Image 1 (cartoon, rainbow, N blue to C red):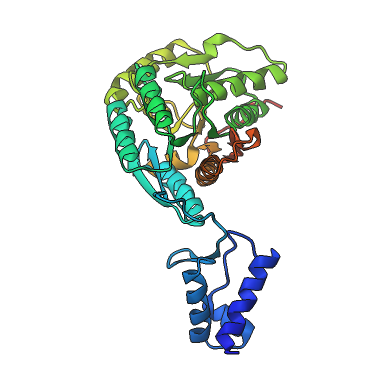
Image 2 (image 1 turned 30 degrees about the vertical axis):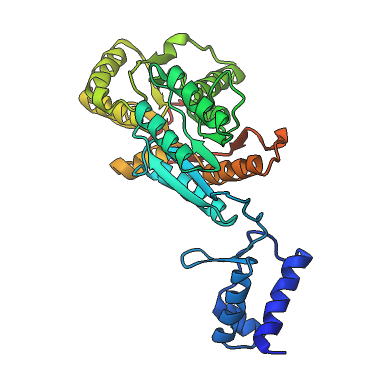
Length: 365
């Protein structure tokens, strides 16, 4: 029996025995050659035939993986569409990489687009995906003013065409649509406890909307006070409403209102609900001559994205967007495979707290 055939059969054995499972990344051809005491060309021949038989998936960037994915259904497109707020935003680009990597292992292709936080554009993108006969859709639903009607049309369009869909990052209330998000409550809770441990009692929580993610963070913020047996006041909540979630066109006006509120309040720390609000807070601090952390301690959600963009070292929560993307893709594939057990629904991924240099202790000894 030819050497490459022996190698090929051994790899098959490992797959069938369960030693190597679906999604397992194989060693490189050079590593295989050393293991099997063979040439790289011989290894390549064996791997090529296994890929042609559908037992392996090869990708020049990611490597070679075991594959036990389902066979394409007759007429199935093997296409999944994902729509996020901005592909140029690193956190959403990271989420899409997670989606793509998970789909790749099952032989699906990803169609990804940015809706630029435009409701009409999102509806148009979904309509185009339906026309291309995608098998599933991952989207981050918008909660801007008047979103209910368009969101309902989008969900109805997908359901009437038999297209499974999963929400990424946020929950749409009063629906049973599966979703993947991060642990917003515990993340905000732990971040608030960090400030409390440093002696802060008057902490402002700044938000601009009532979407599920921000409301969950506010809940965690409140709970940290309650569990620390500290007095909580609603005045700690600074809600400056904006027309759109992404308020770039309202940014200057937002800062003006925020500066006015800061002048009227006494506080030692600020917690912003996301990185865009954090930028507004930083602008306001500068205009008011408040130094971080000498005059005010400062924490935020999506700290990594903020620090990357404006070169600061702010303490805050970093969400696992790559993992969230992977989970959303796997959840969607389970739905497509008709594995609709509730155990697959509503997954929550764990965030991490990054410790920067924006918090100062005010504990007096």
